[in-house]
Length: 79
Figure 1 (cartoon, rainbow, N blue to C red):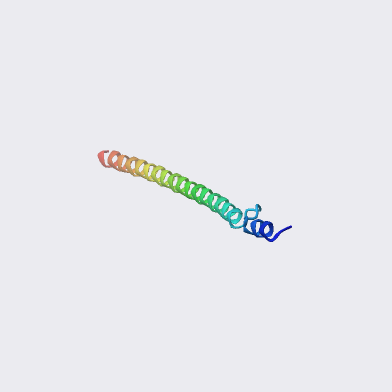
Figure 2 (cartoon, rainbow, N blue to C red):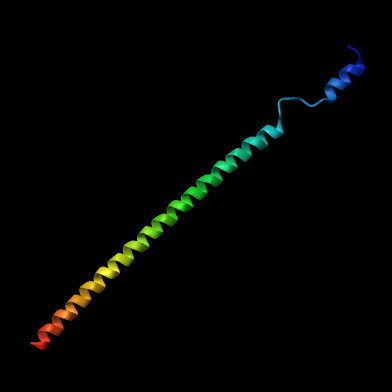
């Protein structure tokens, strides 16, 4: 092997990927973490919506109870 051939083989980059391989792995991990964050945010929002609907149902039931009590008091007062 001559000196020229050795220099050319040393100047060529290795084909194992090196830093680009780690960048690809890091990008994949970042993508997975972003998907998990979106899923957690979506779950949290649906929990809040369910909680808000529960509050609305309790308020409606309490209003019905109060209106029924008021109607009963009016009937008793009218007698």
